[in-house]
Length: 500
Image (cartoon, rainbow, N blue to C red):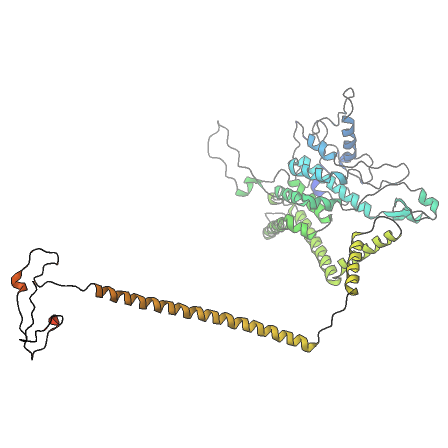
């Protein structure tokens, strides 16, 4: 609840931190002027018909009345967050002669999603988080009450209500059964587990982080008129407990008594935060044990554990880890001893559905319709001519043929690769041969007449002296290569090399 006067932060050993969850938890409550209520009104009793949460819930309904009626002064000063949180609670069911089977102030099943959103967005101060934690504690108490309830039946076997074991012992006939108040407990006692599955465990993890993270508080500066050096402060004195540190111990107690789900715990990573807190608490206790003269371990507090007594936080952490360890072991043992538990549960559920369908209650189950369709298909397939079953020799022959086909396929692929390589070589050889022949033909075409005077064929000037030189070759001499193309004169044995 928000007000003009801020409530002082509870000191070490506060009622909120020391409150055991399974007895009568305490919560931070304030009146309209912001002062705490007396201790007698702070106590939340499980059988109190007009406790704080129930009274607040009724006052919400009264505030919705016409404006001509004034709202009670006790409700003035309540924050919208508190009103929204209490609107998620269910009203206690009062009976004049019977016991209250629903604990007042518990979380309504239809408002769990709304409560998760409010806790994640609106609850960031100590008073709003304490109120949300109170609702969760009452929800756990309500679920524990619902586990002890036993359904009551008439002589005809019709369920008419619920009763505690002590009240059931007093019922001897059908008339006593009919006098039971019809208090309907809808659904299973798993509202807290539903809250965890919807993201509530992540929210509690963040609350643990906020409650165990020290706040930096630098030393105050000296006034302007004073001179001199400021006093030296130890590094540990510059860190103070967080504003929501008093919620650390109630959070650990709530987690200890809450239902355990390994998947949810691992997904929310709250186990890592618990492990970190446990290491910090163990280190602080070890340091205190090594210095017993300076630190009294029974009353020693530390900002890392929310400013609470370290021994109490360490004990709560150890209890929580032991509970998680035992629950995990029970789950693993149950899975190992009965691996067919899920199949048995499915068969039992189908058996109940089949019996109810045979009695004429409800429609035919889907699995039964599907099974009938499969049986019809099998009957149609069985009406055909049965095929001859292959013998062992035939199966072996088919297997050998299959292997032979695979080997043949491999050989064909290998031969194809070799043929491709050979064709590539032939292609390269043909290309090389064609290149050499073309080179030779070009060299032949380039041969022509070369003039002896050195001038080109198109030149108009000629050196006749050079051209008219005659070389006489006798018959007994061999003809040089330069004269192979000239004609030999048979008459005088001379070569006519004159070119005019």
